[in-house]
Length: 351
Image (tube, rainbow, N blue to C red; front, side, top):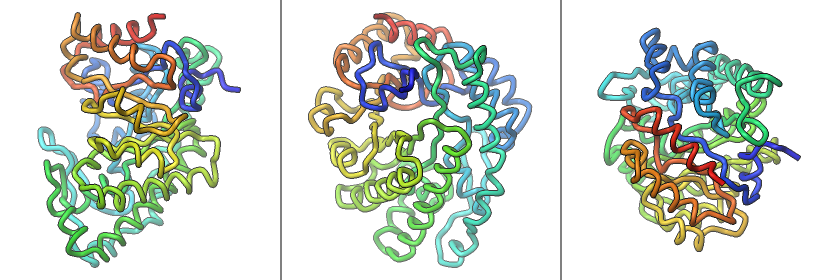
């Protein structure tokens, strides 16, 4: 039986105080991250094991988080398949859009294993560092869990089809309606490739994996079932066919009341909840035994002080006696003072 508090919570145990880690906990709010950021572009940082390992471990050294999530990006998968990708400061990712069968045919999933080999090497190094007797993974109560991740097919398709970030991802959603055969081919490719990549991450050392569907909330209920729930179910089944003991965290961001169906139908062990979800309401929608994760407002973390303390205590009050992983409803904002993160960890772990 594991002593790692995060794995215990993901296994359905009501661990108290709850384990804590934060989305984007390795990021620009840390001065040591900014120092390394100046040394290489984003893709190089993701694909250089020394750098990816160091960036993943920085918040663990500072705060002793219960979870260390691999420093990488959800768009490494389409990049590995051959889609052009670069990151522009102030703009974000820029990709050559996939808009036709010819565009789709240029993607080669057979390239993924070779091109993501540095990612798997980083995971092996991280697992060794976290599990070393005198290593950095000394979270209170049994150590730090290594988390792998991938983007869910719909969210990754949004960037692949639209060619970058958007508020509406109109090209992607229109393709799903007007060219369903082409869109389903893209989704099928992503389902299989995502499952394979998550299994490779587990083989390399990940102890839990998370599926980020950041744009799930753009879809109406029928499309949500088709393009969010069904792909997640297929991926979870594929992962558990090879690694039945590995917990999967699903994050259907902005999914609202659909999180209940998502948790029931996908087979995930935990559901990440965004800032807009009422934890009390969510508890009535989710099946018994499902672990919740979330959902502090990143702006409360940015504000700090009494606002932060009150927001943390409100979540702790609701989740006490339930399996829960304390996290944000989205990622740490770049302008967040590191001392606010330290205060958060201390407040969450207060008995």
